[in-house]
Amino acid sequence: MKRLKRKKPHGAVAVNGNGSVTRVPDCGRKQKLAVIHQALISDPVDIETLRRAAASKGGLLTDELRRKVWPKLLNINVYDLPHKPGQDVRENHKDYNQVVLDVRRSMKRFPKGMPATERAVLQEQLIDIILEIMKRNPQLHYYQGYHDVAVTLLLVVGERMTIAMLDTLSNYHLRDFMDPTMDSTKHILNYLMPILEQVDGELHDFMIRAEVGTIFALSWLITWYGHVLSDFKYTLRLYDFFLASHPLMPIYLAATIVLHRTKEVKQTECDMAMVHHLLSRIPQDLPYELLISQSQELFDQYPPSLLAKRAALQSHRSLSISTFQAFQLSTLHQRPDSVLQRLKAEGSTTSRHASRHSGLEAALPRERSQLWGKGNRIVKMAVWGLSATLGAAVFAVAQTAMEWGPELLLQLF
Image 1 (tube, rainbow, N blue to C red):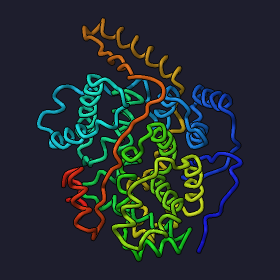
Image 2 (image 1 turned 90 degrees about the vertical axis):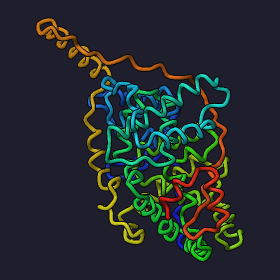
Image 3 (image 1 turned 60 degrees about the vertical axis):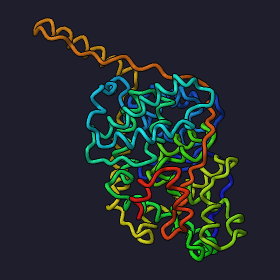
């Protein structure tokens, strides 16, 4: 048995451009706020510091900071956001019916106590956002669970910023999930068992004997855990982490969660249905900061390049992996928002001056939509019962079909 080397948590872990990690000293909340502020006003913006802040203990601390830092992590200009979708976005859209079904089933993803009228408005925005992304990117294919990522962003950054962020994520971090089939998604899941094998051969062998497979972690991966966590603050903490990390970090976290539950797993009957039932339900009291730190250490010790052969996936076959380094480099030369605002104002002045001579009216961007709510939001939601495994028992498939409909399952088999 080869155990993960445990390190005393003397500090946070920085995510470098190639996905590797470097340990940095911890800092207090006030100091962290000051460090983030300084990184945001630096010219160019200090992206590496922002990544360290997002990955380190506590993440980005507040939604206000997330609205400032998340766009920088994805190289988004907050003064050049896409307009809200027009009414025509729903016309003759091939994904419309499925998106509506999924969004209607997402009621529990919204904060408890939110007035029904406000939730209804956000659900309509969610439908339009998803359809707009699909319309902008005809090479992408909608998948069930995509709406869970979209709603998490929408509740924090608002409609127009969600479109910008989701567009970028869909073409990079989530790209492998958006192929016509789920082959690439299943290949990404294939990284899970090699990670376990490196750390705990006994646990790995137990799961192989149980023939449990990896589909229990599918909903974790494709929703960035948004669908399986009942406390929204933990979802946000993981989004901080994933936005600053390599696209495969969610699967490393999945491995860390399984390793954390080693004793439970080994005490379970070595049977596919029993082990799948246990693992597919994430405990709501997990020590997330510890698991995040351990996931980073796992990534550092066993990077994707080391595991690709065992996972039967060469790096160049994954668009998310192959484009990651170029994407990270593209974020390093962003101007601070104060400069972007000034440049936008200067551009608007020039445009208005030109319109007076040409008789054309300058087209001004619409105002940013108002964000709903502030403060802590706790979402009570059902654990995703996706309990179909390749070769799973009929009852497990039926359980999944009842909750999600057959559409997702048909893509798996």
